[in-house]
Image 1 (cartoon, rainbow over the protein chains, first blue to last red):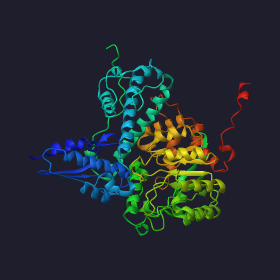
Image 2: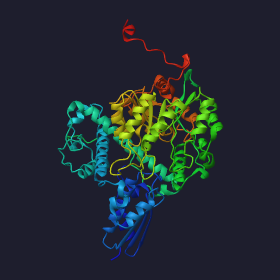
Image 3: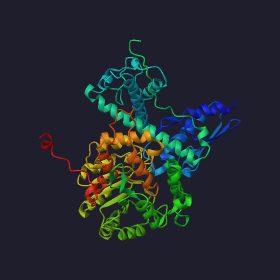
Image 4: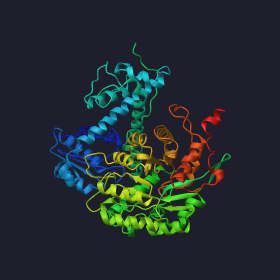
Length: 247
Length: 337
């Protein structure tokens, strides 16, 4: 059994840059993909030599895991190009040394906490996008009213799907009656705190969106032509009509 | 000074460097990687008319710096914030002697801040005392992701950092500029995390902590801390040039900073020689929050004056000509009467 390039690319599409909350394929981080029978070789590239090595390692090792899990792949080779830690990370990947084996004394336990931190940020940003969309669509709605908004109140579309997916990743409920504005553990905030919490969620969303645009731009500057490999990031969307609870 | 529409602005460029990244000063591949990363920032965020060649970018020298800042750039006063990067550059990245000599020749225009690294422990602490006297330090620049032997960074709440901050208190070095970089031990957690600043700001309330590039890429963590710690300030290094490439994002950054901090705790800088001040000053004076971003109030002229220079001037006790100051705010009771 052999693997196709499409299957390999689809596997890479499941690998997400935790900081930017987007697949590495859409970001243009996959520099090359070569399939030779049951052997897959992938080169990754990042926007700068000094991108944080922990994130660089996470994406590279996730890519290797995703490829190795494909039926029909006997050998998955993933190499990170042009990074200040390329030698270290590539050696670790080749030897399947794991995070601690790769970074030695610079690693303490694992990267689970790091992943969780950024899953939470991604959820908070998705929550803000959905709620700001509601606010813009309905001038009658006050920020405090968002306390009562449930998942059933959100319009269908990529924004809501994204929120549901990020809730699921955190183990939060996705039923229609679930409140939208919640903390990292799914608990709603007291009504009077809602404006502040929305505001904080907004700063997280601005951060992620801003970083995503900056990193995409830097990649295009660093690697001429790489823009063609990037999928456009979803723009700010503020539709004028929103499905209401009654509909 | 910059003048536009009958308003005069006192300009302080609060974060500049005189660097040498030429190949003969590069210690290893990382020296090249570092300046290449800066050059990509420059190429990515600059208007086409302001682009430099790679050769120009490697080294500017004092004469070019004076021209870019003071002849062409409207700047009244600028503050050196050097990064040493001794693991990447033979004679360091920031050129201490050259910058200090320039500051001595133009004391009305330039302030020299130096850097320290707590991993030098007692020897570095002794050096800090000598540096404070020699340079007349009012401030320091700390790059927490500096490589040093096997270590690739430190935190401000490390025990030796505390001793250095105590020395700063004692020596009258009140302004601590912090640049968060990407590699720090352990790698388990987010390297850009600014939580250590929260701790030291609480424990050293008489020091100012200016977080460069306002915590980017973690604007949210920075804002959350700054809203609780009145001695935490935002430096606009790296954030400024987004005014050209992504004005809506820039509006959000400024809008968030004004919401979570206040207009007295935000400082302009070009981050020279990453970018040059002239176009940034012009663009900022012309800048306004887009009308559809109703979550933010429009920027006022007074806010722009504070951000462009008056805030940093107050922090560094720089003399500001009478006509460039803001009118003294009248006490509330008088206004009512």
